[in-house]
Image 1 (cartoon, rainbow, N blue to C red):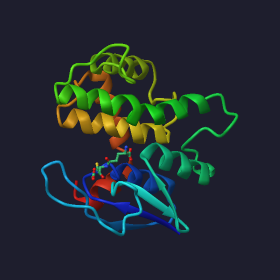
Image 2: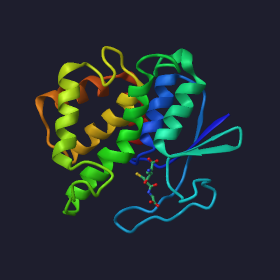
Image 3: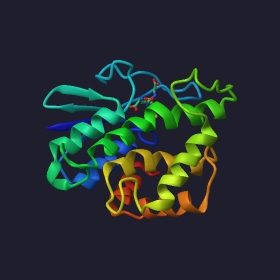
Length: 198
Ligand SMILES: N[C@@H](CCC(=O)N[C@@H](CS)C(=O)NCC(=O)O)C(=O)O
């Protein structure tokens, strides 16, 4: 059994969207989390070591961090064709984009939002404007991050782009706007937003 520890209107929506795309049975446990406005708090039943969401439990074993959960699920259900398999030439690119969201995209945009100075060469991620250039360049040449086929990388990175643009935390461009429209038109995305009231 797959159990997702989930909080509406949070990063765990990414995994709800993925589970809906996979079309596999799962249950969600809605848990309280600490919110940026100071409300909320940790839920002691959430197995995530920091009390964050998402956290997935598969037959009692926890998996945490979106990149790990996404990879875990797409490996568990390869027939859903949401990720290149081991040995596929696109596998490296897929893994790179999964790591890019929490390792580069999120810290870059958060730093800019908080007006923290980026020190080139010292940070483990690139400056926000450079990240936007990379994403615009990749998506101006392709329909999806891996080419013509939608993959779970589009849920993770694309979902973040959509979220950041809607909150004006990322500069909207025609390339990114069209891409966001493409991925959010998917029925599984709509099912996710309907269930969270997002
Ligand atoms: N790096 C984590 C981030 C998870 C995260 O920060 N989730 C937020 C919700 S959007 C959370 O649970 N915040 C509550 C807290 O920090 O205690 C991942 O990618 O899974």
